[in-house]
Image (cartoon, rainbow, N blue to C red; front, side, top):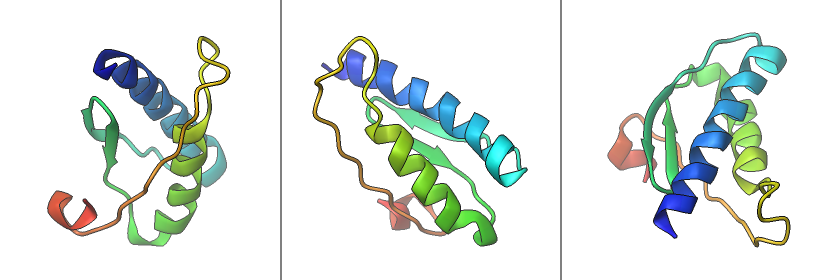
Amino acid sequence: MQALAGVHTFAAALRIQKRAKVELGHTIRLAQQAHDENGFIVPDELVEAMRQIMYEEMCRRPDWAPTLPLNAEIGVGQSYGEAK
């Protein structure tokens, strides 16, 4: 399960980066990825827009699991610990 979570999470990270570039006009790079979480460093003025993009992409069902129930929590903080 953790391996599949990692596949989904990394695919979501790629979509998040692409949407940030297209929709926000910024290159937001993935700073950390674990089996079920992505970490991005985001300018303060883009946090709310990125939260929405991240939530949508983390909840998007993969083609290989169209009925998979997904939900996400988006944490924000000045450090990884604060964001958890």
